[in-house]
Image: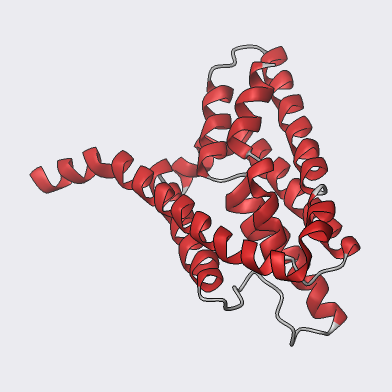
Length: 212
């Protein structure tokens, strides 16, 4: 139960419902469902990688958690938040010019992977949380329970995000466009917090380099 709560809190699918609506306001129910499936699968796969290979991959590529946080924040602010605030079409959003079915299907997958799957659902916080939890497990049973918790959270994320459709119907086109602007601000704040956390975590290393 501790695993479930810890991961669910940081993945926060409830908080991402309005972001999903902002990015997929021009999609049909079926297309939005596909985006949710891709996002949830991406979240689950990313967190499973974090459990079993997270520390190894970071060491292999010389990546710190701090740089991971800063990069995630920059992606959210520059690619998603700023265009939404300006009323423009973010690179992850669907423009009216993209009427070709193959193009739309490709964009659905892209949006499900990034930014919905990464870094909104399985961002630096979730990745780090799972890595820490995995590092504390000394038994096979512990790792299995953590794996089950990740899978349950990925399924829960899909179920919760699919409740966005009734919300979309209630808000209508105008309501969704208003929500889109508001969420642009919140995404900017969230991305900025990622960057602040990354800089704070990297500060001791920066000071050490400057002092040497």
